[in-house]
Image (cartoon, rainbow, N blue to C red; front, top):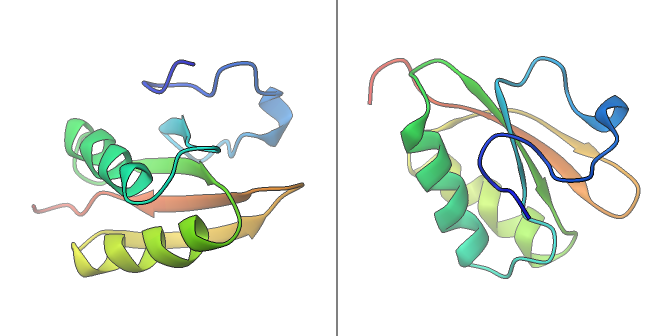
Length: 94
């Protein structure tokens, strides 16, 4: 599965068009999903928006809180069919 810039095999109608990049972490356990999200955000330009797909339960409960504690800006959490879409923005100044 390609975790770099797009969600492999995803129907593009489910992707948030505002996002500059997408990351599918469904099936990825904690804390690996947080680490991968943070690494991807660090590769992005300041001010850009990342859409992350997370499983229900611990991932959607833990990852947003951890990102907020690290200084990232949550733009929204949307419940989809069997997963959650998290929109997170890299701050202008790191």
